[in-house]
Length: 514
Image 1 (cartoon, rainbow, N blue to C red):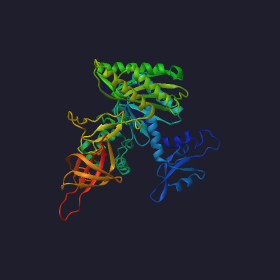
Image 2: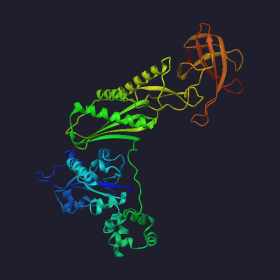
Image 3: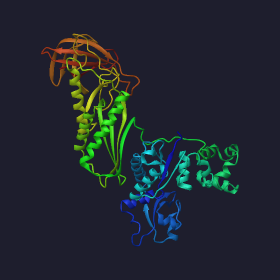
């Protein structure tokens, strides 16, 4: 199947965004004035963007504000906000996810969609293009769009040539008529091509590729091949394509919130059947609600283990809806609802054990999933073992919804007390200790003004710093498990040795056993 790309260009994106916010008067307002956006370039204020009226009056980007005001005295200048424009373009890209999961940013002020195999869901490429235009028009965005066989061909048509649909196999015939400006080369290159009598892409293509590369660089020849459809460069989408997607598109905006859950139930059931056929389960489920005004609302459900249990996922969805600070508002209605499963893992059917432990584990996992859904992934944590011998780094608190690392907790020796205490002090607390022999276990120590006589001691366990980490110049530690006369058990360590011409060793209490 030949690939198809939809290029969207918003020539007045910045001013259209401000018009949506009410900072620029709407079209047709009384005494409407031209508006421009300015930014400091070098030592002068220059035009970064112009609205439609300013363009019609002959203003262009990069013109100084002083020259623009000399031509149009009543010009209204506002400060450019490139970061806000970029964020707004990302919102538009999120809405375009309803057409295809492969959406890439195409600067300046453009998007490229890989719509291969997607157009039939919208009545063909013509139906998809009409729908995109209708939605953007309702959103107050000026749009120029084209569909072609390569991203560069679609971009060139949307910005320099005949907009619309270029039939498969017809890219070169149509695009050869475009001006050399469609190459978007440096101004000096465009002037040189024009002086050589090369006015269109057909004129440039008639010259040997080696001659073009030698004179203007290989990048110009590559760009020409891609525009004419001889070479395809796949786009890099803003969001990784999900492993599983199911969706519903409505011929008319869907605004019945009472029936919204029924649509979600069907989507979850379809996704569960797809995952079951693959032998997989999802770790994250993202519901996207696409409103007719271009607004997108996304709800993410995460599970601590792979799942395709439709009933459990529906419970999590209800929990998520109940905890929303901003209720799900259909506005003028939803055009589409999409359920994506971005993270899938193998999931085999498990047989319940006779002692019922598997049932208990599932109940605990379901409880954790509900807590994560209600309070957020960063507020429900669990400890995971780390591949290290350092006692402080041996455990790490992770989100309960995050995948568990491969490192396993060390199994205790049979009939042996635990090697590590349950409670650690960070930082370790200094104590005064007396050892019977140098480099031996303590026989008495003072901690928090209380003296403890050691009845039993085990050790030493020598732990050296990890040389591949920062702070590897720390001294080695000799750890001892000790028990005092009252039966209380402590974890002590000593740094340094009893050697001449060196500082005396120091003792610290690092933890308490239960």
